[in-house]
Image (tube, rainbow, N blue to C red; front, side):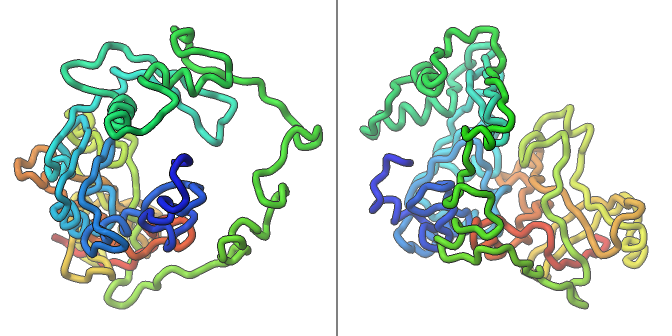
Length: 358
């Protein structure tokens, strides 16, 4: 992304609306999903006609699912690379078989643990026609005439290890590289904070530069109403599943077979709901136009005002191409307009809602 000319970056969808997310300075370099779908449907700031996606199930991961589907159906050409036929893959013109983690090499870093680099070694060669995502995008870039400092996967890994004086082939049997930790670097003059002032900033000159309030201020979420008296937490996760993946794996589905909504016994009693009942949920954003279903789980000492649901639920066993992605998908009742104006984070934890026995 840092090789793109400024005039091209200025055309990135959302560059003006959320500059810290997708602006010309490449702070994050992302396009907000709501703005992407809106651009496809409205043709503003320009029409988007094709999409290539890998390891991404937009039909489950993006807010306002019906708008996402409309956007997919309007595109002229869609390519999805995945391990399974997800609801998103079903909407694609071409589905490419991705390699699993057992079939791929890799280098994994983390901004919070910069002194540790994880080295991933494949257990087997990729089966059938499966490709590593990185290999696919390198080859696609070459076909498009783009210039990279690497020509294949091994050269790409060597490029990333160059500063450490290593080559990927030399790391056989090595699972991680760790550089020595150095404490008190600030006092020794060997460290500075990555802020414009080089100091710890309670008053953010970085946000001020972009025209945002430099001081943190509390903004109250939407208040519950008599019609929608509960607060929804919509992003609950389970250990068995990562986002929308894993529902097609029998062993995991035996552990967690159905989508769950957690609530207090008092909240359930008021509505005639018992543990294990199927419950319908509606939000203030959509009213009775959209609803999703979850199985009730009563939790002692749970706040009576709050309900929490699991996200990412679809049903691979359902033969319809949508695979039941509208049944218990919390993003069906989550509007795409409720996002943080600075970084674009979606509001998933304070949405007024109502529930009733299905």
